[in-house]
Length: 430
Figure 1 (cartoon, rainbow, N blue to C red):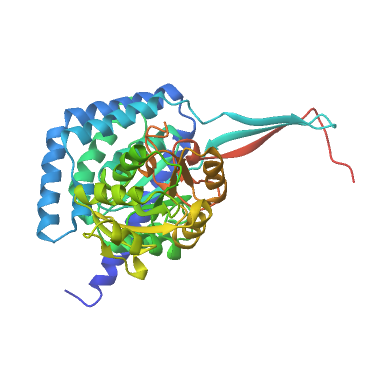
Figure 2 (cartoon, one colour; figure 1 turned 60 degrees about the vertical axis):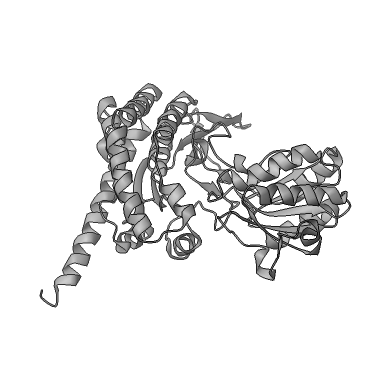
């Protein structure tokens, strides 16, 4: 191999990425004008192809899983990577649910008339081209692609090497759906390489053809995207979610919520990582909550009150508070009422999702008002931090920033707006 060959390969990849960007921009112009019925036809055809090709998808996923296990990936990553018949059906249903949503494109958000007779309208429009970077989550291929199509956007998908075979099999079904509806195949492109250099090119904006980047993955990925991206980013860095059990909580309800919030799926960003218990609650509350978690196989790391409640509780280290475990591990701490919970979450939380369990409406109102997170819940599990559960059909990710999109990023959050101004010959004086 000549000394210049690596540079040549790098140049080839750079040009290939630019070609992807240009194709996505061209497709986005066509999608922006596509009718709701055409977009829905594509989504339903995608769902049908997912069901028809479930065997091929599972075969590809089995190869990914074998490689992931051989590589020693953590159990939480294996869980996110794993596809089953039920999960493929959930992807298909998600696409159909997206199709049933109202078309956000062209909706008039506001309108008014000025004294000079000019009529103003704020109208919802697609963003354009969305780049999505994700790890070990082949279902994101379908969710992201479907949401972008419904909102009139083109998508450039970059899956991680761990899920490459699975994502490619899912992507083939999406392309088949686009073809069936007469929409451009380049409307959803999967970057055909696992090279890390491809991520760098995508973050550069591909000659201005990419409008927004959405990362779905671990802290290192999100940090890199937020640091290196030359276009806006919709993201959350970590899901450090809390559930606070107030002195006025119903204990049976609290146990159900806490166990579900932690243990339903431990590897998702909406899993509760820290349980806060009101120090004014009866001692039986801490005991029963901790015991319920331990009995489901959860490791509990707690303060002195939690350790007194059950001998199996391990002492919590200082860095266990504010830690995203993504595993069957939870930190537990007593706090001084709802204000103590609010203070703890402000210090250790990630502004993702936090919940209060209480029958005291005043305490709930204070918590919901003062906790500055993208999602706050009263008497419900943090595992509802999911676009599908919000009625969005699916989500492209959870955003914790405060500009444009916050919380589950669904169809509406993947649009922008423009102003349409109608006059009758007005000119501006002066």
